[in-house]
Amino acid sequence: MHITDNFDAGNIEVITVDDNKNIQLAIRPDVGEVFFQWFNFRLSGEVGEEYVLNIVNAGEASYVEGWEGYQAVASYDRQHWFRLPTSYKDGTLTIVAALECETIQIAYFAPYSYERHQDLLAAVQTHPLVTLEHLGDTLDKRDLTLVKIGDGDANKRNIWITARQHPGETMAEWLVEGLLYSLLDSDNATGRQLLDKANFYIVPNMNPDGSVRGHLRTNAAGTNLNREWTNPSLDKSPEVFHVINKMEETGVDLFYDVHGDEALPYAFLAGSQGTPSYNERLAHLRDRFSEVLTLASADFQTEVGYDVDAPGKANMTLATNWVAERFDCLANTLEMPFKDNDNLPDEEKGWSPERSMQLGEASLIAMLAVVDDLR
Ligand code: ZN
Image (cartoon, rainbow, N blue to C red):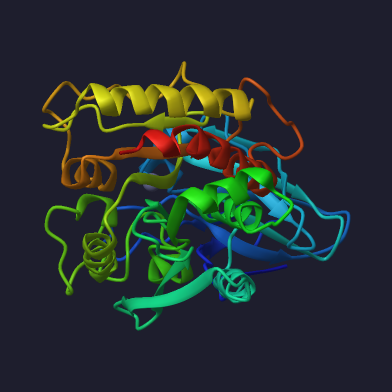
């Protein structure tokens, strides 16, 4: 039996593998040792044999509530991801894998690889309305890439979408993939009408270094990018620095920052209600957006979510709050579950890349519902 994490976004440390019924593993923390929860590794063994994997440091992970009711994700072909029997007790996450093929990949959520990221950029750039722009280098010297869609007409609204500030939240880039392909599909009437009314600026992966390194939450310097928006720097958070520079150039009329939540088994929005300049116009836009998204996707709901910030009490270092305040625009964080949507559970797959992509397509309908009223 053999375990490796020596590949893109891999993360596991092997403590002991002597006994197939008690393999001991640990998750390697992000640089800076503050955050960890993302794991991603490959196990090779005997077909028919059952392996019991114990992640022994799960109790010190960033979101221990994230393990309750959680089932690990696995794949044999790295295309179809399903859930494995998983339980959490006394600080240890136990995953049971009965092998149907020699090699199984096991992860916290379906990975969105750096290769797939590049495939996505290459695929969309062939569309006549798409331009790729290199916003700058990351600390590990990877490209931070902006997908610009539209003719840049100044009379159109400017819609900004960012995903994977937190690199372990891979569902965010799955959502962007679904949204992008729908937006660029000439048979998709919602996409066509939106492109008549808006220019899109999309960063499918805000944190490529953290993604490749197998981090949960931070970049190559151990910085949580979604706490950097009031004071980004080239040393600590060049990703945010470059995106803000570009936003200042284009303006922002709608902002959608896509994330995943470890604990809550629902898809929901977190808005900018606590920002100093929040007003009735923004509240109305938010209500409309959220009402239409509820209709567009039965996987989206408004009953469960984060506590709403009291007026003036927003944490302005978060992207959504900073952008809302700076541009006086509709700004939302979308959260999707790592677990499942408890209102519509799927026992085999849980929350999945496919559902994330469909929620991306549905998000376009909500954007179309508000685009004429953004200014
Ligand atoms: Zn996040």
